[in-house]
Image (cartoon, rainbow, N blue to C red; front, side, top):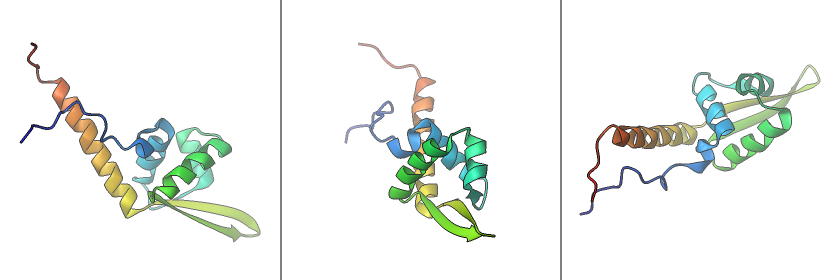
Length: 109
């Protein structure tokens, strides 16, 4: 059986790996849920940019989005799903494997 290539980047989850989405998922790991405005401020995004990236995360099943009205004002709350948490752990393991492989000398032909 062939040994896995530690430098294989094809297993990296592109949905999480995008910089803004990475920040969103990382922040959501630290809270039960976040208001849209709170998340926007934490990751330093514009409303439109964050909306686009949340849509991609939602389509992947990584976040849940709840919209409601509070005192006649719209409120959007975002939470990380169990699938999102699992995807994060897989992404993190892949990054750690790649990083670990850079610490080991490779043989050159």
